Image (cartoon, one colour):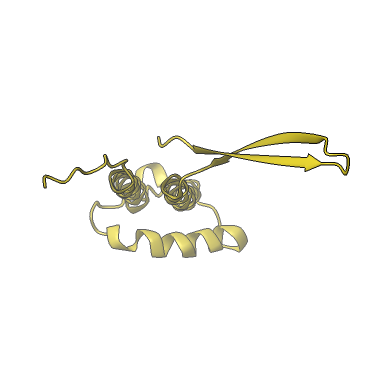
Amino acid sequence: MIKPEETEQERTVTRVDPAGNGEQTTTRATATVTPMSSRLQSAVWLVVGVVDVILALDFVFKLLAAANVGFVGFITGVAGSLNAPFRGVLATSVPNGHYFAWPDVVAVVVYAIAAFIVVSLIRIMAGRRSPQTSGI
């Protein structure tokens, strides 16, 4: 994980009264800044987490044979768009009358792997570069 960068500012103020007596005050302030790449990595994991939760809820609702109304209908509609590329990859099974939706499981795994790859690329791109020396 990329560590936050700390910046430190120092400001010195000298005050002189009319009699010529001076007083010097030094103020130091430290600020912690989270690098943009770290925020981007967090955003990727947040989006994939939400997508995976929607797919997992859809899987559970189908497994429990929940009625497709209200919240369940909303989740089923959204999950239908998210798992569409994975329909037909594995056959859907119905053991003991419960609907086992394999496209949801495959989609969760593929989206998690895709997120890992994207976050790894962000880490590579944000890596610290050593100063280049010219050979002149």
